[in-house]
Image (cartoon, rainbow, N blue to C red):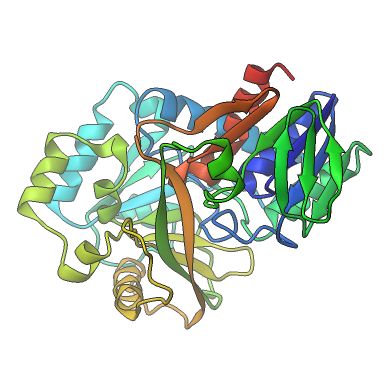
Length: 372
């Protein structure tokens, strides 16, 4: 079978992976020279712990298995099973952790409670004044700037994969894709995964797409100078991930509102160490378009202070800052929007902030549904 994948972010790359795994030939088109969207503007987290019970958690757990397999076969993707610590600094936050630890799926998620001493044994870089932490042993990380080229190189070695960058797709029809150079690609199966690009061709294919766009700000620091052995989140992350919904979270929100800056920017702290020792920190959430074209400094000030309090030391200098935009299903309980828009043509979009985590399993589900 000849498969054409449009869009070379993580979602498109994982669709190409599964097509190659099942013995097909793949042409992979990308309008940029390299993916430049949310797939490279993220933490590289494989984030299981915060996912909603049901299909979302099942997708994340399957994706975690697939990421580990990919990591073994593509070492340059930078996969590591480092786990995560959601650091708790108040009784109200601890109550949220205790509530989820007592749920039936706590073991499935890899949850455990760690005292401050246990936190420091697990991650000696966390030296701040804390109450404890919720461990999620199943969480992991990859390198967002390295993983996609590494996976593509692995696919190319099969002799059945062709990456065609710098080509914007202008027309998709049953059996063929045409790019802006006038080149047509004969295709038995076509998957369109264009991320937050929802206009133009995508609107023609799906005029009533139930997907919105979300903007975020993040940063990366100079090397920390020591190992951060797990990914780290602060207690504000409880407010933004569906796994933690419940009475204790309601009490946290009602009795302990966020300070003005994180509240205004819908912030949490997530912190992941890159292979070069730097820290990726973030993030914010902006939902109302038109989005700002610049980045705002107040969120970075908050992130540096909060991360410094958790680590018990100042963070290194910020090396780079950026904003990104991802596509999210308007119904956030849905993991992804998958729609057959023409005979043999599928549009897959809207995983939201779950894209890096869930894409391997989303690609697998698409392959199963199409019958590759």
